[in-house]
Image (tube, rainbow, N blue to C red):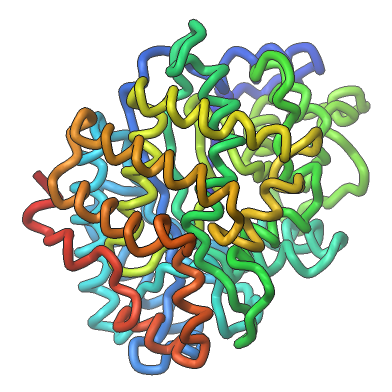
Length: 444
């Protein structure tokens, strides 16, 4: 859950009208051109090295994060409401540049955490601990108040979930495999395949939940105005502008004291009120929307669970980059997932039947398994063309053999050994790709 300020608007203190909001969103949130840059945002659970089931006391987390903030990282380091750690890469000109810079930052972060007897775990959902908020500030107080109105899922999302978020350029203005309209549509249909293949959160509070991606089930159960995708019919810019205007306002910021949490007020209604929002309010409003694909000048794909092993995150990054930025692989992916759109029906992701099956069944779903096999093969063919190292190609091949070809996902390993989740936290059970990715090689 990335809550940093969006790039979609430029601050200005005058109030904005409904028409101005639509023009601003349409003009800025899809910056088209050749796909040149790639990024990744990695969320991690932080736990005690020796007793991973135990929550880390706040004072120990605060001391560790103070030390981490002193590191000279190329990625932005932020902390999520429940104390999860997030690293957001700088835009990279290639897959290997992104892999190398983030890997170096993770090495530095892990070294500091080891000194504090803490460690990172790539799990989409904390298998043991209930949601407990670490950050207490007006934004998260307001967010918790708002999300609690519709159930406990929002608080769990805030405090116990973690993900791999891949950031891609919006694509060309013109039609075609790399055009922004195709990429927008593909992100929402292929997104279900990515949910299923990389599902890695089948437990909560010590018990299996019935979902292979419990994290994705939380998003689907939250307020639909905040976590659903807009309609995929028509122009993406117009659809997203309508979505931003019609989405409920989570909070109205105040210079001091608690923030107001209105009930049932859309941003459109706010612009028509006696105290309309300004451009900074518009900018902030967009950071409180959590659809599976969020346009922020680029496309932010938010549906992938955090992955096992120190370097497991590299596989979804590489596969996604290959399927979107290589024209041949993108065309294959489009043709492969097009039949799945009928199964999705008219409901938006993540609430439609396709996404529900992906989160619940993973690749035990025959159609999703078949689509994943084809898409992973296309990605493997494309990886050399986008400059992936031999080690990254081998990691993707091993993931494919271990999971995709067998109709499995990382969550199935946890379910096979549910009583040994401590070992999963410590990384001794699920090291699926890290031995293939020695640090001296992946940075080249």
